[in-house]
Image (cartoon, rainbow, N blue to C red; front, side):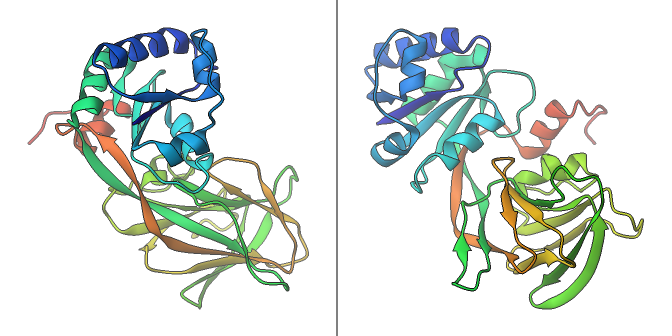
Length: 283
């Protein structure tokens, strides 16, 4: 069973959903639609993303990278393969563009795609009553100052060993998938999806020697405020969680991965060249 989910606010989403569902029906493929997606084309459904993730074998997501992140975070803990159809311009996680919807549907129905296992981060906040587990991160975890104008001071340890005290607007801990998102905009490196690494990137650091650091994804990263400042934890750009001065953020690699659909001929360097508009000939 295929779960069909679209970003209803995207321009052109209705046209793509109508075309995709018509093709699924023509091929007699079983599918269920998320309720907002169904309403786009005048149909009804009472199903949310968590129900689709529970009942379907694969999720066909139409939108952009944000739509895939949103689907993951609304899946109720059920991790299913995601095949993304891009509606928009820039996207590192989507598989094909909306103009290739016929090929996309054929690939989904006939299984003509590869699955790239993407690392997830488990996020916990320490507390006197015990650690509080937050949602998993596919892209990144950001610890920041929120709306205040002054810098924050953040203690950071890696595997229990002191790293440094960052004086910055914040700190990003990104997976390889997230290395092309906020971390890249903050000056961090791009990691290959299978690099088994994490990257710690300071946001506008006060000390110029504070640079991005690549570490093993087997490492445990702990971050906390160096003073009595309130800081905020944001997972994949979603609603921030306030962190009291006495609390710490604990980050570990999740034992689960997200199976992300990729076309067999699309290598990660190909995607980088296309999305970042790199030029030059192959050697």
